[in-house]
Amino acid sequence: MIAKLIQKKLPLSQSDKINQLLVILPKFSRSSGKTVNQLSFYGKDALEALLLRRKMKLAEICRHPVSANLSDGSLCAWVIIDLKQPVFEQQTCMRKALKLLLEEDPQVVQICVYGSIKEKKKLAELAVFVTWVNGAMMPSLKTNKKELPRNNLEKIILHGYKDVNGFTLQRSKAEGNIFSRELTILPPNELTPALYCSCIKKIAKREGWKYEKYNLKKLRKIGAGAFVAVAQGSDSEDAGIVHLQRLVKGADKTVALVGKGICFDTGGHNLKPARYMHGMHEDMNGSAVALGIFLAATRAKLDINIDCWLAIAQNHIGPRAYKQNDVVTALSGDTIEIINTDAEGRMVLADTLSLAAKKCPDMVIDFATLTGTMWVALGSRYSGFFSNNENLTKQAIDSGKLCGERVLAFPMDSDYAIKLKSTIADVKQCSMESEADHILAALFLSKFVGKTPWIHMDLSSSRNTGGLGAVSDDVTGFGVGWGLQMLQKFLKNR
Image (tube, rainbow, N blue to C red; front, side, top):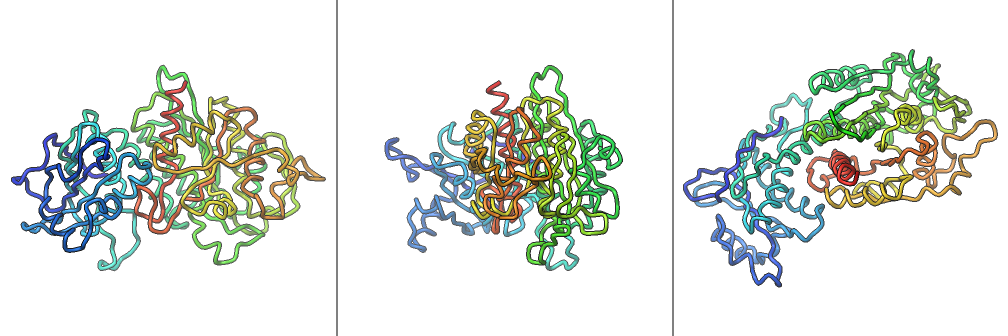
């Protein structure tokens, strides 16, 4: 549940009743001839006394927000945001400040922004988004009341700036991010392919999306052998490719979102050791991100048609599971030599991308927690992407900077593909060597989109211990903000 927002154009006054307050100040440049000291803001005397005791300078709260109890017993936190810093840095600082209040499990948080009209607008948008995205608590299966997480934040009261649209874009992005994270953390027995598809169907009905599921019987019939090879290892044939559609009257552009939805990945016959199998219920994060973007775009009422394709299955070991040296035929007609059953993500995506590309969208973006080598290359603070279109590459990087979800472009030169050359099939699924597997995976997937403008996002930052950017939780929902920004850019540049 997302907190209710109340907006008050005037700054906070001494007569207002508060329990938890976040005071946000802009950082003035020397060239402007202004300083924060010239501002009159709530709790200024208390802040100056606190800084004196801690032997801190006022400028230090730009990186290290502080909090203190005021004389009336209320808890106040102060932070300075440098609007010239990258958005990622602004979000991180705001998250740290808000955490000082949320740790007290409040029902209501009040926020007061200061500065010029332009500064207050930017600070308010940042603060409201970060508060929304962290105010909602993730599902928990704990039964010990002492260990239960805090409650959902119920209300945000914003002082000093009023947005006529009620921060619709920020709210939509927060709702998409929260939804993505809620799905990702569910344990595998709570999110089997059957349960996942049922959940999506209910949401589709609520949001007015068209829902269609290509079950295994249908996928076998149309020749989607790459997807079926992975899915057939599960006892219950509940896997499938889900197609969601949102059509907007008058819209002339269509974007396809594709997500890898492996609800649990054992590695198949190339079984993962326990250390690497732990956490593999999150291997469906790509599909959760695609759904989060789809939801955010719907709530934001973006003037664009969207097709969302979700490859939902499990990768199990069993007598029917696919094996090394199998050769399967994909929906595209290409034959694929199986090298490693733990490279299942590119298999299910291959046929899903083929289905998406057949609809001739203006752009395809796929999301997947696909390779360990991307994590080795970047760690978990950036995600890497590949594209067959230079203009999309530039838009992707710019979108990352604008939304605070940092991405980096990787090469996809054709000479890497020698590693995928097979003597018995059209292509190898992967290479036995692990080097540059993220590049090989992208080259493999590129075969199934043809000339359609395409981006493949390898979500190495789907989880980061201690949170990332705007989000405090380890599961970050990374990609939802970036995807929404990409859709906005696509509409602007059409």
